[in-house]
Image 1: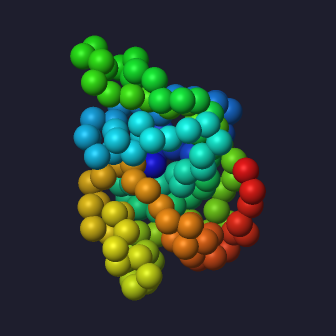
Image 2: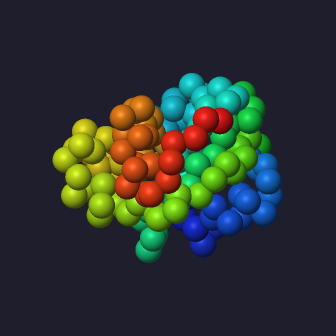
Image 3: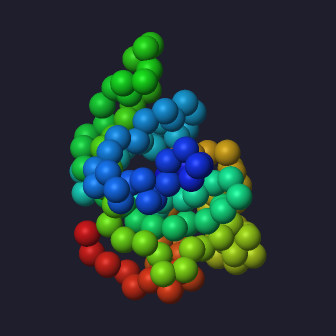
Length: 135
């Protein structure tokens, strides 16, 4: 899940402890959000100047109508922080690694919510110097 850190950062989520993830206005990203379930983990990605995976969070609610959407087309989920990556994994690092050639972050850079395979999850943790943890 991607966000501009000047708008909402991993620090903000840590301060909040639990918050809603809203404002997604892309059909493919919204489909991915509708598939989320409590207990699912997600990568927290800072866009903008940073362009890096910085941490991991957990989905803590079923998808529900996005309160910022007056038309009722989009969904939101509640999230909580779990842990930071020891070293952020930059987009440049991901693009330079052929294991990620088919990942949506590389192929569809504007997509704000995308799936991550188990292999990609493990590789990103390895690259970030962060051990895999159970939720």
